Length: 358
Image 1 (cartoon, helix red, strand yellow):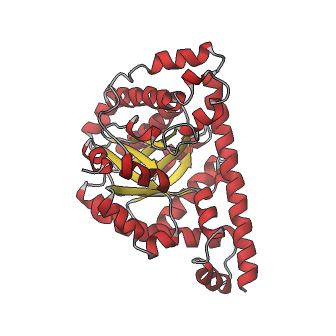
Image 2 (cartoon, one colour; image 1 turned 135 degrees about the vertical axis):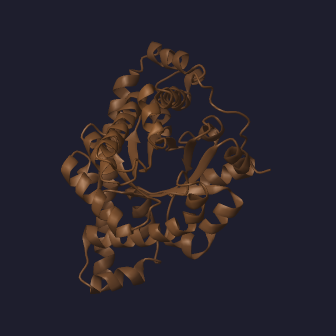
């Protein structure tokens, strides 16, 4: 049995952290679904920037859209929705078979709106309506300003992938925003059947610390953060507050492990996959990580309910001079900025192509 199938059988969903028109046109995504147990997909501005800037497969459609008067952000979202609705349709049978638990794709609101609650909610609603797929998440950053946008989007019936979470506290804030949105729906007599995932970024922790800690501590922080957050996730699901919501028909906001491609060339290329296996969670993998895990990965057990030795590992990082709380805040700020940078690059690529293809 392939390692990907074993991971799937342990109860963790495998999603692909990539989208390109070639993946769709060539049948590669369909093959990943059948051969590597892939049951969903995520995208972000960096992924789309790379896909559009380094490919000619979007050129005919860009030329056509330019001819209709579209430009910039509007043109991009047209391309993105085209790709993601095609992917959503491939995953629709999985979404149906799992009663709406799995089989999702994700589209991000403009990263420029990360600190603008009102504009984020408006764009989230508009994009979800435009895509018109029940298995499409709108990605909203889990910043402080993002929390009320997450709550409002959920209340409005928009499925949300909360992105840019880096710590247990970030996750808990996202879970509370989700629960507030559901509680408001129930109070208003609406169905609590609005799905969400909470995306915890893993590898950036180790990238930020690998050259600042002793070799024995290298590449251990990301997994420890994942384990600590998994414990918090289980605590939320066992809380009285969540049990009341579940009793009204709500379904769990699943914890999703993101940024799981290894950044350290000295470490295993599947470091964050087997180590973060856990039931009722998701791991969204870059394409090369997915292929590597399918080829030589191992998934032999799951994260212990208590998070294993994560607190000891985090304490050790404190002893060697890493302020974990401050680093988590910094990583979120840097992550939001990097997505804005990718967004600006993406719009520049589209503008350049639009001019060249007129």
